[in-house]
Amino acid sequence: MAESDNAIVKFELFVFLQAIQKLSDLYAKEKDAVALKNLLTELRPLFSSFTKAKTAKIVRTIIETIAKVPDSTQLQVSWCQPWF
Image 1 (cartoon, one colour):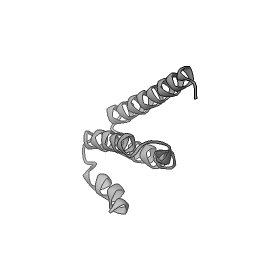
Image 2: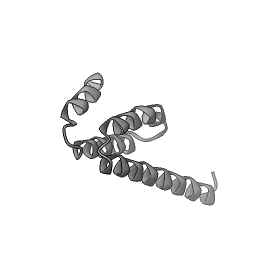
Image 3: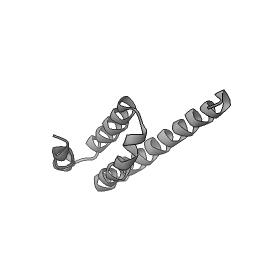
Image 4: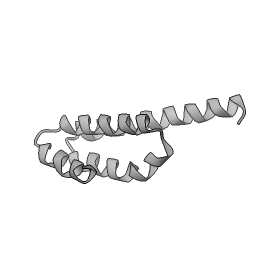
């Protein structure tokens, strides 16, 4: 892969991650914890394309965003249980 191609891929990943963050923030602002949970579920197939560290950062960020939504504790627990 040429250096310019690598730079494009990195930029695309950056934009993708920013979009995820903005969408997460929007759902949190609307207090829509279910939409956040669904976003995380929909992203799950893409995680195999990312490094473990990048995947962990995405998951952690969205779960932290869900935590900002009032009365979402049970939803967080129910979503995390299959991972353990």
